[in-house]
Amino acid sequence: MISYYFFLMILFIYLHRYVYRWGEKILLNYSNTNELLNLTEYKIKYIIKNIWKSGILFLMLILGTFHFLEGFINNRWYNVFFYIFGTIYSSLDISGLIYVRGLPTATVVHHCVVGLLGTLNLLVDYSVSGYYRSIIIYTYFSIIPFLVNFYLGYRYISNNRERIKKIAGYSYKIYTFSLITNILCQIIFFINQEYSNYIFVYIVLYALILYDDIKLIKFLRKESL
Image: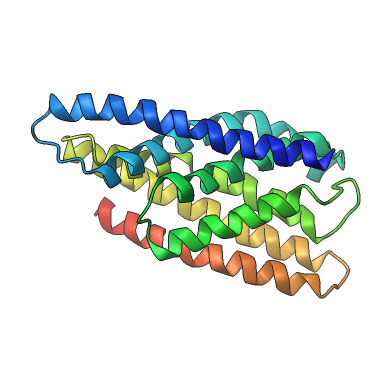
């Protein structure tokens, strides 16, 4: 069964190549009709990566909220849903690593950790209580600020600086709220779990992601001023 989800992850990653291919054609045509834009190959792929991810995260937020609440409130855990959910989420970041060359180091580390957590996600049984449920907490609060990814791509294709600034401001506030809530929920969750040495593995992995999150929040704050 696990091999099925690995195959699904590989399939999602492969299909992303067509998203980048079609998106590149659309953006090249758009760039040619707008002389104010200066879209390099890197920027084009970066735009596609972020706007596409923003749309997928928005859909995941709508579809995932019910299962998130079912798990942590009613203690009903649907492994199949969380396997597919994690597979889709991690495939977005892995695809970014493959198809967008030249990403910042902190972002590369972030995506690598997400890819690792996405793999670990397929090896656990969420119906049994354990530290690994924190992966679901992390993922859920990471899809809430989907507007951040939209902003990162949209800022390169719009000449409306006032609108871009407003989106940056909304993104900063939502991202900050989501990150703080995520950290608090993680702390509460870990406190209520039986001690295990695995906690240090999760702390290190989350710290690597947190570093990139904080850098991005600082950037959004600066862009919103």
